[in-house]
Image 1 (spheres, one colour):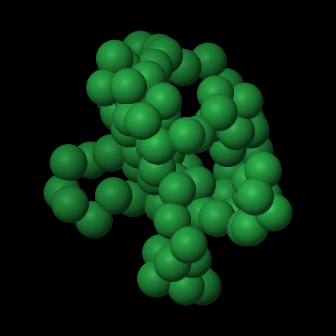
Image 2: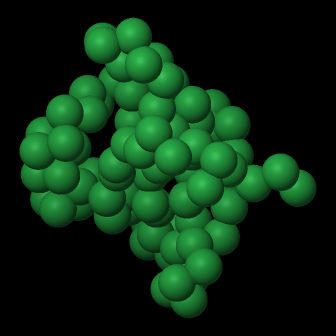
Image 3: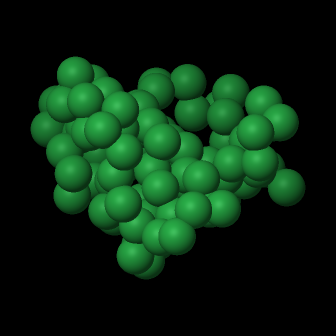
Length: 88
């Protein structure tokens, strides 16, 4: 998928230790794509991925699809997979 990284997303990825290749992997083949429930109209692409420490984290990428190309607003990882995983 063609997309652009916002400055904020680049900064947060660096700060949070999320390699760009993991964000690209989520964008290319997300396990789930769900609507952001905050009411912004954005989408969340998410996948469970292994990090260098051997732990599995949920990587969530917030995307503004109304822009051309779609813009990654931010990205983060969480160990609280059950909290964010959609079973539908």
